Image (cartoon, rainbow, N blue to C red):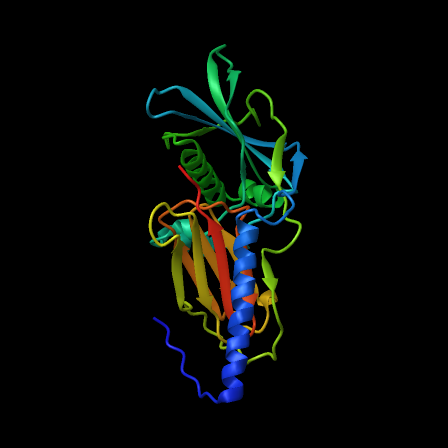
Length: 292
């Protein structure tokens, strides 16, 4: 638990009370925005037609039926962070190789007919075109791409796919490649409340102090609220926040803080809101809980 120590006098006490009142008003507004009681724009999206890449043959573990992955490419999908082959080897040998995220769009399953005139299930996976070209030139990156694609499909569609795979040499896709509707972001998720003088930043990243709150405290959870203390961070522009369906990753640049936590519940990423208060140097992330 974080304890804040400060000297007080009459004027400071009034200032603190005023700041607390402002924070309560901002907090209530934040909750209202998150719960949809204030008017907000729907998440922007864009229809793309992916380009062929490579076709991977596998099978469903439960019924042994053939499954194909059309791993496609598009410049609309953002690239993952730069990763060297040496860093990839270290990542694969680490305890948590899933810490490296590859942005991808996972399409709905569609039925096609293979060369044997047999029905099969096909999934279209779309990644950034430059990252695809990198994987095409490097066998290790290609194997890694196929592994994360299989895992992504398994998580999204509750599947279990065989790791006994075959890359089709003379075929870049199975059946047809459908258009996909992908979300695009029009504004940063972090909104700055105030400004403050810059502070000297240490070079080594460390895990910040944080608390996770559930609203309401009892009964069915509706919101998950993360309050993260970031001393030394003078602006929201220094923060990179990435929300997954059950995960929060925060980086304060340059190498000041790094936080990577998993949640016991699923969250609504698109309707989550974050605000950074430069007075208290606290990032508050309010995330609606997905009802199962």
